Length: 188
Image 1 (cartoon, rainbow, N blue to C red):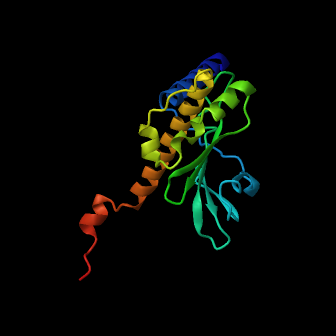
Image 2 (image 1 turned 120 degrees about the vertical axis):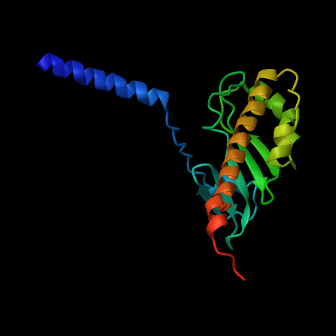
Image 3 (image 1 turned 45 degrees about the vertical axis):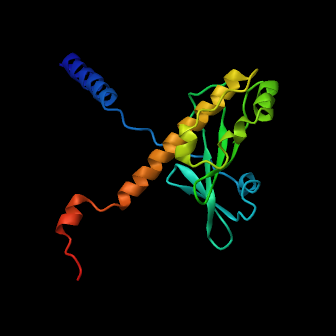
């Protein structure tokens, strides 16, 4: 009888594993703390950094006015590699959601390749662009640092796409449902 119980228990365990792999749940992303000192170079009036829905950071001044947004490409682009590993980025957006700065964070890239990318102006390629415009822009890799350049471009793309999905989700939550529109009495 004990063997039959072990067999049934084992089958239930295997079945549970099989079902969970057929319907995987998204793993929530947990963003690291972003100290004020890291955003001050991009937002001179920054007084507060607030994490929004485990997705991005809002930067506010002393009066609570939103100055802009900071996106970190990691962990969203963890599977994207440059020449020698991930190419983590900090992407600063102004209050109108236009890119003001793209900066490579601590990484394992060969310093001379990382410097070529910076000297080649790749990070400035997206300055002034909206998220949609940046995603649509075809940027050439920097000669002599193609892997690092492609890592940066792909990290930026993956992160901006995730941010865009988050904004769409936030916006759709504000739209009234069909049920609300049909059955909410109109005011006169």
